[in-house]
Length: 219
Image 1: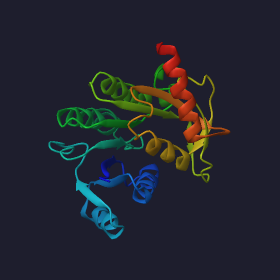
Image 2: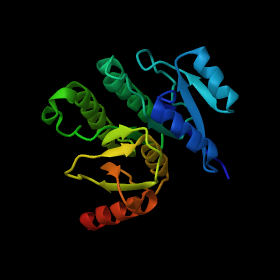
Image 3: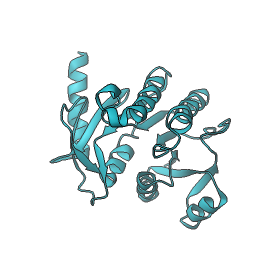
Image 4: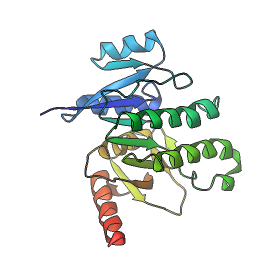
């Protein structure tokens, strides 16, 4: 069986690092960590994980050549929203479309559909909203995952998941990482946007239920 190459933008971040470890354990996917420095490259190479030396604030020409699917989990932590969270994502989406990447999984945020409603995070959410919309308009197959507030709690592999939850909540980075990897499969959450917080339903089951509802609404 040929493993799919998954590029992870934001691989050095707290959530991205968890994504890399999950992909490394998978029998279906081969992670490629996008890094900005030689120091970061050495860390992943020691894990047996391939790397790609690229910076979201610079040219991304050729970044997705030979890549099957992609997870965007990068973020500037509020320091460079325009160049990283917005324009970096947009450039990577354009590059993925150019190289016909089979699926682009975007880590977004709850509230990105109405940034003006969360004044303290409005600039961040506006950047995420612009990136999400560009992805929807790109022609790529995509999944946009919008978690609630991220915590460092241990993962439970259980979530509450829907297109719009209409409630605030928290979720562990570990469970967000599991969800992002779960939607990489060809038959899961295609052309879909959904919100997640911690809950009582296994991630796989929550995704299956969401798929069923989506399919029902299309009929």
